Image 1: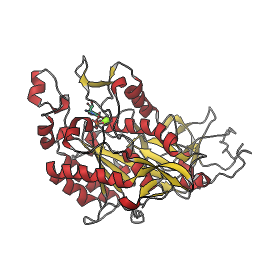
Image 2: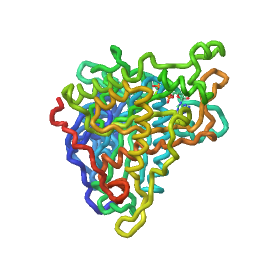
Image 3: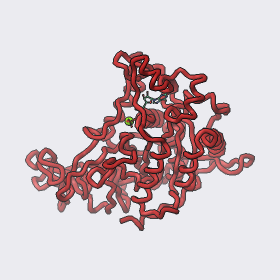
Image 4: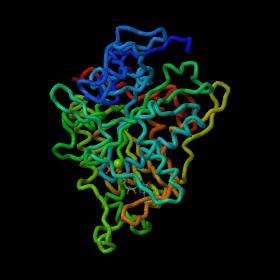
Length: 452
Ligand SMILES: Nc1nc2c(ncn2[C@@H]2O[C@H](COP(=O)(O)OP(=O)(O)OP(=O)(O)O)[C@@H](O)[C@H]2O)c(=O)[nH]1
Ligand SMILES: [Mg+2]
């Protein structure tokens, strides 16, 4: 049994319904086989209760005398990972039009970070709750362990088993299931002595692109599926060059990716591909509108969290940008020991090159991005590193053993370095006076006091 006292954070934010509450308001989930039925979740869920009795190990005892181990949110009653009470949550939203590549990106970034963070940064990046992360594990298995078989990640649905239904008052509310990870410094991390304050709980969501479109019913009080935007310290917007006319025109000169074929060409081949009905700056505009509403920001105010435009499917448009593949992770010394550092100067230089390209091809998108956020970073990513091919059912798929992501880990690594002080060592300062450090310039603290 642990000898040290468990330290709880002052303010817990539920990863399901985004309500904040003090840890003492947390409900427990009954273990007794006769205590079934919850007023918000239905008769198949065990009772949720506020404990009055604890056993000698500090676990709550339910009304039938069973010791319990699981917690629930006092507002929505959904199960909370234990880590959510011990390490502050960082919410990260992944936004983009339908088919822009959000699910593939999510899966390849978490898969890459699970090994890169412990190996190169001495940070454990693990499932905070294996049941909650079951779907992302399935994505990762398909994408990376499927061998020679042609497989694909299914389009994210707007309803179904990726959502929970909760009764809030008289209203049935549909909430997206979160993916929750614990990021904890290991024993050899330069900040291991402060692990309790440096550790974070990372919450991610895989929405259907339709939920981000500017259309009625995409997000409402009964269907608040993109309200994580109101809590996010970090937003990743996936800009898909295969859904932009200017990029498409040029990519046709050198790429054979099926996604750059015109609808006529696809039709002649007897194939069909999903494309967003809306231009990407319209999707971005809608996102900006929702962020402003949920944060109660003025129209002239700019988002001061981390805003990363991920220009995805880099394997297709690589010839359009003239950058030698820079190593964004460099070695350096900190307190007489050698560590890996995320090199912010190289990240910024890469971002500037991508911004210049976007400015040539789609200045209207850059204008909307920079009108929305005060600090925008543009990063190229290929979640798969190669083009998909049609399977026998005319669905685009990949062979896992051909997948080699390019820079899939960088956006989240960058976001963690900026939002979790002391977790990811970075190199910053002028390029000729680079200085390894443990604390990045954090974004200005977001003001949640104005929230309803
Ligand atoms: N060339 C290339 N294609 C990719 C890559 N990643 C994803 N794709 C293709 O992009 C398409 C859409 O990917 P998804 O991840 O399902 O897109 P999504 O944004 O989750 O779509 P919704 O769930 O409908 O919102 C798929 O057909 C993939 O084959 C990549 O790295 N390179
Ligand atoms: Mg998806």
